[in-house]
Length: 94
Image (tube, rainbow, N blue to C red; front, side):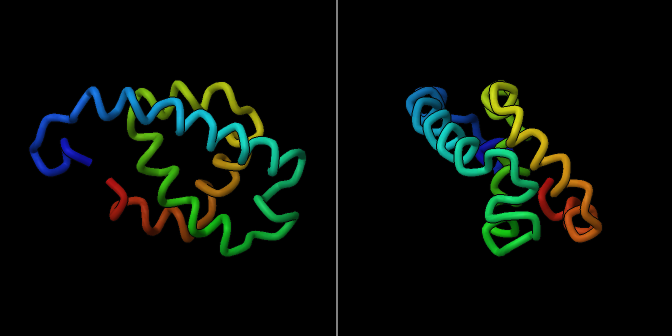
């Protein structure tokens, strides 16, 4: 978010958070399994709350690199990002 405020990112802080982010992605990948959405075959509040966080996360090279190791979440993100509601809010997310 720092670049959006015309600030330099704190690279030490970013580096220290990558392990935690990888852990969170692994847990979500496991929870998702073969389901279309986080809690089943229908979109839920879990997906709607997670989607904007993923939109921001995937704007970073680190986020894209970590996500590349999570094929289920990549599939989930493709499904969520293609929804009309996400397309309409994309301009707000940067």
